[in-house]
Image (cartoon, rainbow, N blue to C red; front, side):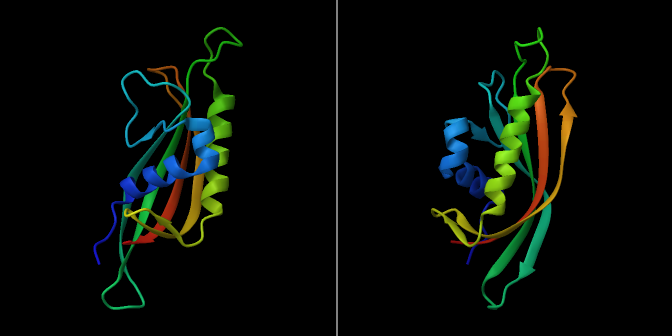
Length: 143
């Protein structure tokens, strides 16, 4: 059984999650576009490896994933970053990740579980965008 692409699986999961899609309208990718529409969620693989499954021919991947919730420059105080929108989005991502049990994501893969590790606000001095980040360990196997 082939291992799933962690990035493709988690991007598809976010796009098909009704709670997240109500906020994002499909604005999820592995990179922030040059001229993004906000809010926007970036999901990327930052580490991990392959573990052994109970069945000898079924491998499990344990991927360290980073979720970045972006929002633009707010209008309430001049051009201050819209941290409220970015924070609310990352909190929804956390809630939805915690609900995952064994979830099949189309033909991409099966998410077996998640472990939230850390979350923080990131200052984006160059762009002025609001950004919150979440690191999570995602366990999955092929579909």
